[in-house]
Length: 149
Image (cartoon, rainbow, N blue to C red; front, side, top):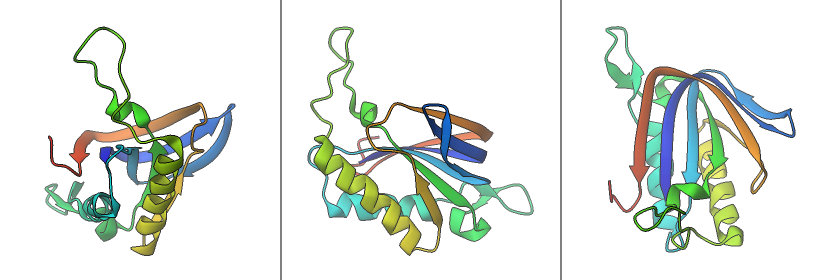
């Protein structure tokens, strides 16, 4: 699984110009599921995103997690994180999980984050979405459960 983690002051996801979900301070997660991902990958990313210390403490050091600040999380499915652009000009998405598997992991990611006491919300799987955010910092972190980067 892969995630683009953005620290935000606020974020929202829209479908057909209607706000589907929105959050205040917290994390916007763009989540991609690979064809060979397992529950181990899922649990790794849940734990990592909830406990990633990228929020400022009283001294301004990135020392606090989403859990520490009691922030929210907005999760948007993003199969294009598995786009391979090494050959040609059009990305290949063969490494992305098929929709039925990706949707299962996407929903379980949100459930798993909620089970850790974080208010996690999502977009609509496979919908054409618009994402609006105010990136705080900006702070953007890339995560990969296979630790490829």
